Image (tube, rainbow, N blue to C red; front, side):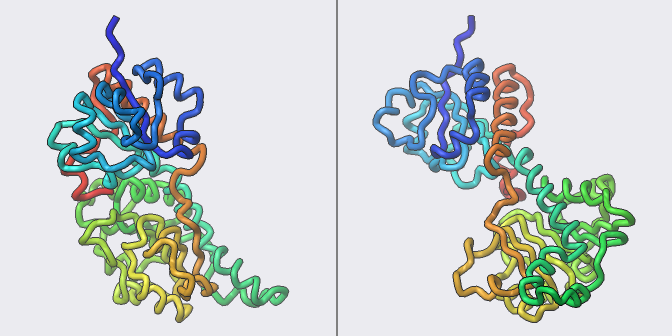
Length: 337
C-alpha cells in the first residue's frame, strides 16, 4: 500500500472552524496523513518543529504566514500548497517559486458569491432600491422622493463590466437574464470573441463609462490599475448611473469619488474602499446616494467550504497524477489577483 503524504492545515482558528467541518476533515484524512496535529495557525509554534520536517503538502487559507526562505527551510519536503481562499499574493514568495512548489487557489470558487452579490446589486440598482432606502429615512411618508433618482427599471439597461476576470465573466453571463440588456466590457487583455461568447461587447473604457446605466468593477489590484477610476472617469458616467465596486478599493480614487458623489449626480455601491474601512470622517458615510457594505461580497461562513471542496478536488487530482483545475503559475500574478 502506497504511503500517504504528510500534510498540514495552516490558517487562523476561525477559518479552520468554518472551512473544515468533520465531513471535510474525514475526506482529507482519506487522502493524506495528518499526523497528531493536523492544524496550526503558526509555523513558528515549537510543537510543530518535528512535524514540519515531514510535511509534503500544505492546505492554507486566511491567516497563513508568508512562505519565505526561512519557513521553507523548515519544510524541506514541501511540494504542493493548496490554498482554500482567493489570491495567493499575500504568502507566495520567489523562494517558493524557485523550489518548483505547486500552488493552487480557490479564486474560481470564490468568484461565485461575488458574482451573485454583484448581480443582485445590479438588479436593485436598476430600481435605485439601495439609495431610495436611504432617502426614505429623510422623506419618510412623503413618497414623492421616488422620482428623484432617475428612471427606474431593469428592461433595456446598459451594464458596464470593467475587467473580464473570473468574476467579471460570470457577471456578464448573469446579466443576460435581464430583458433587452446590453453588456459592455472593458479589458485590455481579453479576446473580443471570448467576451462576445459570454454575451458582452468589448469596448474602450471611455465608451463603457459614458454609456452604462450601471458600471461594475472586476479588475485586479495591480500597479497599473490603481485609481483607474478617478475624476475624469467618474465625470464620464451618465447622470444617475450607479458605480459598483466589489473588487478592490484601490481601483477607485476615493477623494475623487467623494467629490463626485457629493454632487448627487451618480450613485455608488461600495463593498470595498481605500482605505478599508474608510476614516470615520469620510463624507461617503453620510451621502444618501452611497451605500457601504463591510467587504461581504466574497465567501463568508459556510460559503467558504466551497473553496475547501475545490482544494480537496485538486488535491485528489494531484495525488492521482491528473491535471489540476486551479493551479496558479508565477506568471499568472502579473494579470490577476
